[in-house]
Amino acid sequence: MKLQSEYGDVSARDIVFFVALMATAIALGGALAHAFELPNKINMPGNEYFIVQKAYRGWNQLAYVLLVELLSIILLIGLYRHEPFVRWFAILALVCLVCAQVLFWVYTYPANVATQNWTVMPENWALLRSQWEYSHLGGALFQLGAMAALIAAALGRPARPKS
Image (cartoon, rainbow, N blue to C red; front, side, top):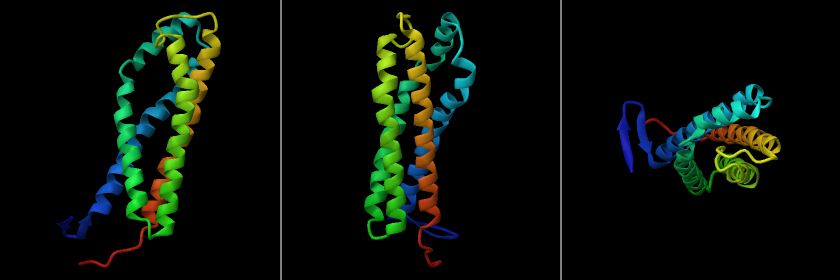
């Protein structure tokens, strides 16, 4: 599939790259929001912290973006299988995404479950808060790594001659 523009053809590979970059950028936005709020939230008293956590209701919908990110990166790896520079940076982006998800499922999600999505304050809530906040920080760093890897891959693509 190719589309015409005044700058040349737009291929399926270009479209998949665009989707991968956009999905990763959207996921990175949410991840960085968590990272940047950490210094202001980490020492809040419990009642204030639980009130602030209400702002994250509905953020589970970002899972759809993560699925698009995952699938588009996998497609990139396949589409650029014969171009090692691009392929290896796409693989690095995939590894970063998987690492971010491992942190979420091992640390963040159990804290959400233990607090019933921050509506119940168990005795160990402060430990769960640290687990939740720092796992999100780690996830943000991995999402940043995924974005950087995709940008490097995009910049390293072979130039196409103008049609």
